Length: 515
Image (cartoon, rainbow, N blue to C red; front, side, top):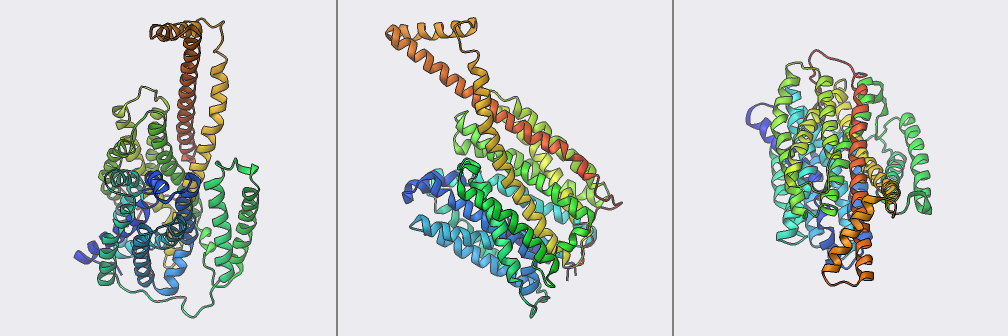
């Protein structure tokens, strides 16, 4: 039954705060990795496991969260997840070795996966059916802004304090969220209490999704199928997925109810959520690497650049909720979001080595508006036909697809950048020859500059060639990064027809009847 007044808003703030904890922690660690590496005496590849471990655990638990909420009661499971997340955050900050930190991050990821989808289910239950668009918009603030704010907060804390504080900041928020959950959120019955546990389903899900996530996280650094363990994990992911689907379709009490795929809007929504994750997470991965690695921005500068886009998202969310409530088709709004993301990608595609902080304000602002137009309508379209316990199952699967879309996007664009660097370098080197007057003019100009500084002729020639090599490398990197933005924009643009495979409704509210 829907809540009203102060209680409704207390629940809303509680669940959004809990979701923000999980979402910010997906990206906040990235900028602190060099400091953690130095402090714990580990290699960069080893430190990357603290990100991979969290992501793998998170993706494994997301599709199970609906089942766990039904089995133990949604409030009990949500409260347990908050307490574990908060406790493990303290342990992460207190870790004295890389092994400890990786183990605690895995536990943090398992607890965090229980926060995201469960908080969305609680929010949908707390708001009246006719205001679900507004509720989804409020939840979208955390889902879209969280990953954006992560690097900003992480950069500030790392520059001004020490890396353990990126975990300690979770503690006061977690304590307040736990107290508010206990006081305001109503208990729900344990619908699956006493029913047999699908242990084989749990094992197959962990094996399939865990293997896939590791392949996506480590594939590029291991040159993909050149590494034996990547081949083994890829085969494990495929076989594990097929066995998992078969198990869930034949077991009486599955942990993931694939029968909800009978709803066309939800089935198509899984793909659009994947695309949303692809654009959201991959663009936030490429942008800091591009600005810091090529343009020389600091981590804090790159983080600050992302803030305006986040503010535009925040400002747009209430407006989008109202438009959905008034019956504006979610397909039209999502189309606008995909087109705006395409515009952002094309503007980034025209970046140069002289681009400064001011050149990125409007592209990122447009991206922020586009993401706001995407998240709420896409979520609304995906779960519009789900009822009762299906809502919890649906939000879990929907969130998992968004996370997997992000992992696929990061892996795909990282590989694309690597491949295109070789392509662009070969193209540029064609022009580096003595028969090209532009090249000889540039070479002679550089040599004269070095000669005027006292270099010998041979040293000046070597220095000039080295300088040209540096220019070629920078141009190669620039063209590769702009290619990555172009591809992400085209994928979003080509996904627009998927929206119109989902049902139109006069009123886009989601029929929620969560028990």
